[in-house]
Image (cartoon, rainbow, N blue to C red; front, side):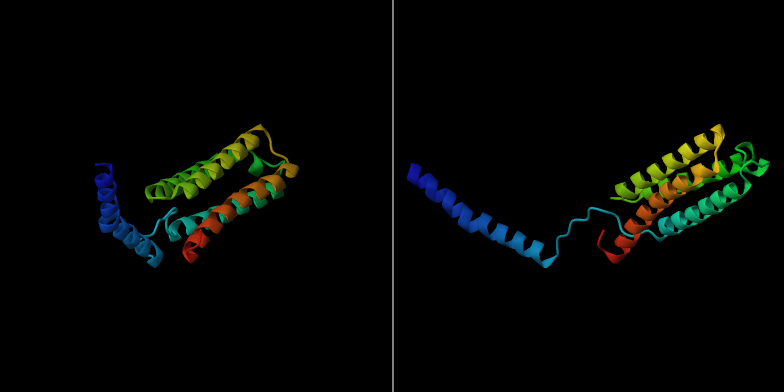
Length: 157
């Protein structure tokens, strides 16, 4: 009986499983089956992050120029922070709505956290010496998001 069971399994392997395994290997190797780990390039996120960086740089240049004046006070700039929050929320919602876009969504969350930190620092009193590291951190975040989007565009994230 053990000999019959052994031959039955062997026949099953030869007849069904081996051809199935070979067929799957051929499909995978030919590219018919692909696995996507990240979303496709999103032109709107690319443009929105670029616009955000430009807006932030303009703000930081103005802040540097006006430190010590009313124009640089936190109270004078609350609307700017409100506008940034709306922009970031819009980007995050769009990114989150795209399947397999977790990395971009996480990067936008980090950028949002950086803006929150900047706002807290501004509320406490910002100095000219604080601005260069803030600029570097925000530009690094924006660059990382843009690099990922451009890699998606080229098809090699």
